[in-house]
Image (cartoon, one colour):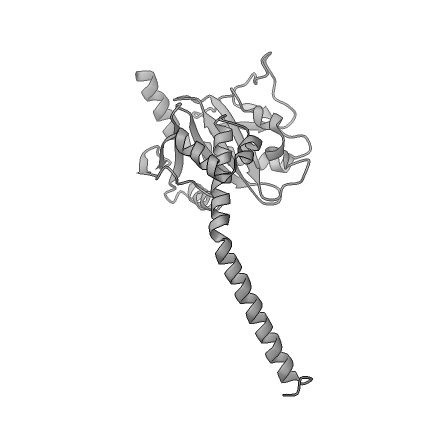
Length: 253
């Protein structure tokens, strides 16, 4: 065969492309299990951080196996609820929701097409729920933990796909921002369940907001702050019926 001809070039290129594609497909399939384990451990680390069991940095040092073991030791029950507050189904205790799964439920919350949103309750009574929405450059998500049978926030952790370093990325990188949520309260009777406000929320002497459901926005990151604010309102709004029902039962008891 003429190695300088067009036919040879086409055949050679086709073979190379096929071989490279096969190698990449094999590598992707081989690494999928490890990637899934990493994503699951990272998600659980975010939940444990929000629930104040440890910092994200300390959990990362433990490695996947110990993080999963810690979660298994602390989690008591997990289930899904509808936006009417009713329980839909139990979840396996090792089941967590990836950002992709949260994205699907986000669409269902917004269009009212039967969202099934997860609730995670730990043995110490802490309840953790996710939030998901759009930042400036891509999706943002996270977890908010509540004190037992209460609308008082115990902690929060947020993550993002591509927010600006030093600005919007502070929702993940700045512990001081996440610490602002601690001891604040979600107002499940209000359409704006929780607000991230530009210009600063008035503070009490102990650092909590004068108005319980408001905290300071991130300076210079208006779009990311607005996106996170919308995500929190959308998701906590979807959980409102559940939390109002839980609080009512506690008051009766």
